[in-house]
Each structure stands twice: as structure tokens, then as C-alpha cells.
Length: 150
Image 1 (cartoon, one colour):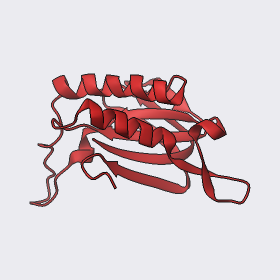
Image 2 (tube, one colour):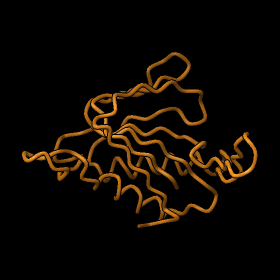
Image 3 (cartoon, helix red, strand yellow):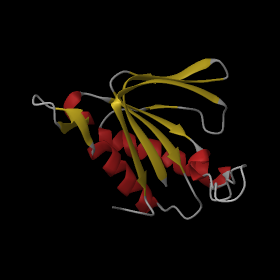
């Protein structure tokens, strides 16, 4: 699994012209799933996302997490995070999981993030064409890949 996490002051996602999810202060998380991902990867990634300390404390240091600042989370599926660009100019998405595997994993991630955060999260619509708006705060953007747990 790959996650691109952005600290935001606000973010929203629309699918088919309908607002599906929006948050104020928190994390916008784009999630890419591949066939080799496991529920162990899912749990590890959820705990990592919720535990990230990316918000400033009183001294201006990134020492606070989502729960400490009352932040929210917006999760958006994005198979293009697994784009392979080594050859040619047209990306290959062969590493991205097929929908019949990816959608149940995405739904499990929604449940896991909700449990780990202790409150419901906002989401996009799996497989839909979406329009995402955000105000990146900082900017702060973090990349996590469960295949490279550093």
C-alpha cells in the first residue's frame, strides 16, 4: 500500500458533482493498493497515519498528532500512486490492484482508520472520477509505502 498524506486546513472530494466528503484541519490521504498488500500492511499503515505527529505545538515544532489537535481525515482511493514510469511516457498501472481486490481493502481501511482515530472519517467514492480540492498546510506532504517500512 502506498499513502500520500497531506496536512490540510481544508479538503473536499466530489464524485459526479456531489460532495462526498469534506474536512477542515487534518489529513487528506490518497491511498493506492496493490495485489500483494495484506491486512497486516493495512493495520500498520492505519496506525502510522493516525500516529503521525505533523501539527505544530506551542514552540512551532511538529509534535502533535490528529487526535491531539482534534483533526479529521479524508481518505481517497488513487490507483495512480502505483504508476510505473520507467519505460516510455505513458504510465503503466499494472502494479495497482484490480477493483475486486482493491475495493474491499479500501473499505477495510476506512473501518480501520475510523477505529484507530476514534471517530468517523470522510471518504471519496471508490472507482469514481473525483474532483479533490485542498489547502495544503505548510506545505506538509508525506509518502509512505508499506513495502519500504522505514
